[in-house]
Length: 59
Image (cartoon, rainbow, N blue to C red; front, side, top):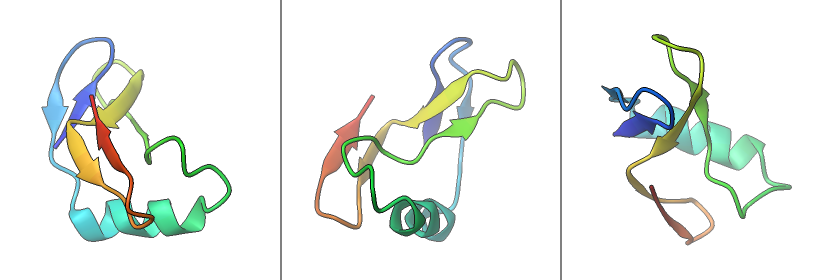
């Protein structure tokens, strides 16, 4: 589940999509994959996600 940092809306993004972006952005493993909020355009961050590099991200 992803949460918008501005408006707080929640959106389900399939794990396989998140993992694909996580693998593509191999240079920046400190930050989780982020997406744009469809409602307000702000950044959406994962509520909790264990990345492909073994790092757990929480919002």
